[in-house]
Image (cartoon, rainbow, N blue to C red):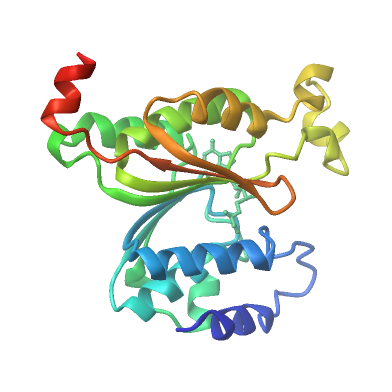
Length: 233
Ligand SMILES: C[S@@+](CC[C@H](N)C(=O)[O-])C[C@H]1O[C@@H](n2cnc3c(N)ncnc32)[C@H](O)[C@@H]1O
């Protein structure tokens, strides 16, 4: 399914009356970039940390549909109701098989801990692309980065959302985060994850910040040859 079709269909989705949300949690330009990257590099095994209502999952599934194969594991604490990824996939008319939808109330770090504990080491590096767009807080997401890095293939892409966001920007932050300290409210916590964890990691290269400072990209380095490993040892 081409990108214009999936976006057009998402735009025609009418949520149930009284639902006050908004299904698009990433700008259209970012979703177009993700779609194009999946197509161009044939990234057929992807992971999304933070499903939200599933608009970006549908865009990635549309790219798989165009490629003829692919699967996205998308993880959230909740299958949100009444609007969620399954509802949107059905609305846009994409096969449910393109997605492995995980709703784990303990969150993606506990889920990844289970996967890492139960997967043989040689099968761990399985994903070609990760969108990190969940908790938006330093502690869970610094760990999420470390865990997902173990599951990304050499040359896989990582995209971190909301480098330019802090919790104080939430319109009713007093309600949702009223017990947080000023430092937690005012820090750009995903920028910290990107600058401190991603950019300092020996596992990544090709760093780029796009969309007016919002999105942070990185690519996992290719596997080292035996000679490089020997020289680095
Ligand atoms: C901004 S939304 C994701 C948007 C989605 N990626 C998109 O592009 O449409 C963030 C989601 O992360 C989920 N979330 C927050 N913390 C989480 C955690 N620790 N584990 C799993 N999901 C989490 C929230 O429930 C919310 O649905």
